[in-house]
Length: 209
Ligand code: SIN
Ligand code: FE2
Image (cartoon, rainbow, N blue to C red; front, side, top):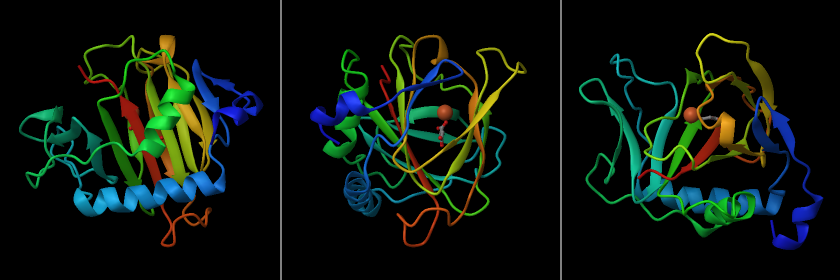
């Protein structure tokens, strides 16, 4: 990914969100995975609990000033430290560069959530609403296996659209779509060779305060 290649990128509207298919080429994806391996060794993946006390099927960690955490006792929230007590690692420059390229007018992100989907993992429809400033977008980066992403409206229960997010795709949830319901119904385990052991990584960058 570099600025010279930007005009070649096509953008597709998906239910009000903007998809940049194949934004990252293979070299950029591999570089990002290396950065994420270092990140995960400093701040290991864990399984958050839903606010109903069920373990989520995705495993997570974060980078940045804040990371996302959830348990039955206090529900969904941002925390200044990893559950082990260490600071969240800094957001890798390879990841920040994507934010700067696709939403150059936005504030700098405080948090990068790292979701890992192993075989059978999914994420139910939800809104990203633990942040204070909904004028700021959420930028999502997909790596590894294909994920069937579903997006609906701000109100729950309306019509939804589905799209397979592939390795290297970038999706911006901004404007009208900032509070759209979204989730991942399933992944196609083993569909990508990027991660040796298979699985899907999704990064979401957010402005928190
Ligand atoms: C999320 O909503 O946090 C993750 C979305 C995705 O995995 O594509
Ligand atoms: Fe989300």
